[in-house]
Image 1 (cartoon, rainbow, N blue to C red):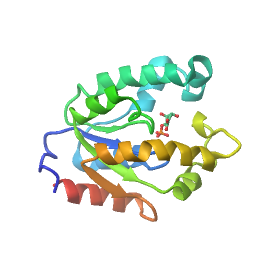
Image 2: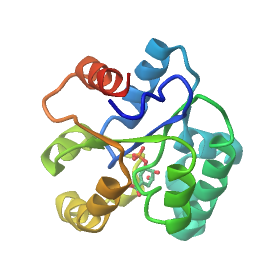
Image 3: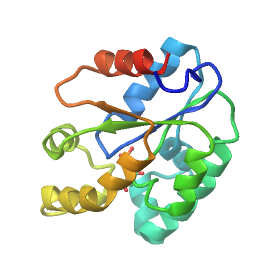
Image 4: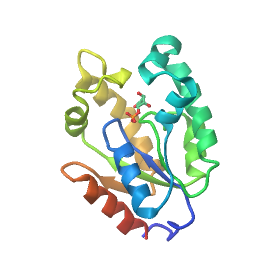
Length: 174
Ligand code: S3P
């Protein structure tokens, strides 16, 4: 049980690309009768373009600025389920923001699983490289400790169905 705060707090999903934050978030929101927001989708809505184009035009740094602005707006909402982008935890500012505004759930996922789930995906600019495994290894080396430290609850997603992951979150938070 984490704090027994499920009826009050925002639930914020963190984890790498392909960990299932958006799919899990949507289903969790349905089950708990909450609203669901996905920070990447909000960025796409506010700019009117897809994320790869933002990376192309403004670089990763430009995207990160937009991501922080979007997270700031989203965490003001109450009792929502929020799916963050895989890199949202890089900035110290964002980590504080998330920590102060919800229960943080980390969807722990292996690199093999991430690769399997993202192999046909062209909407993730960081993985459009010759060797996505190498890229993910390097990202996870710096990011995994941040995910771990930030999370109040960690749920493994490898070899588990969406349903199982969602149930596990609900069981642990209520
Ligand atoms: C990113 C993850 C993506 C998106 C962007 C950068 C990252 O979100 O924010 O492509 O740095 O890991 P998902 O985790 O939803 O794929």
